[in-house]
View 1 (cartoon, helix red, strand yellow):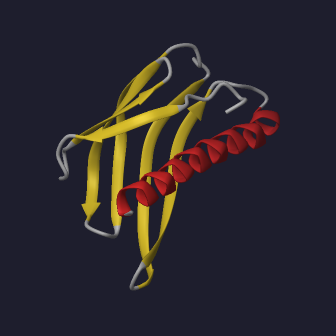
View 2: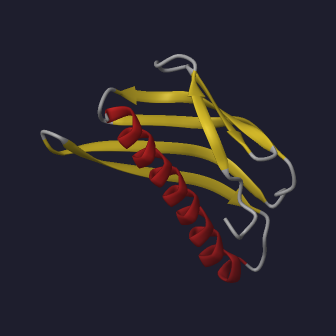
View 3: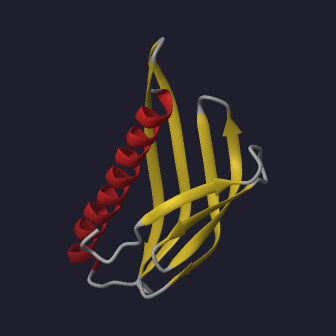
Length: 122
């Protein structure tokens, strides 16, 4: 999160169906997404339809995809894919740093999810 990327606090999915709206709240704003594909226990895909984040005008968000793959009866693998835009140049310099920042954000989200699951399953 050292690259001035938004730090998520919570996300709320209003309707668990294609066309449903998910709002994610961050320090300094929010991102609003629309569900474009949903296959229970397999896929959640959303387009970013609006984002209002303070600062960070160099970074834009386009799409978020979550895939779920059963490993065994009690475990699954979740993969998150983020599609973003950037105004930073030269690209060869900024692309690796942006990827590192997005990976940090994913790790932050995954670690919070693990904590929530442990708390709610006990």
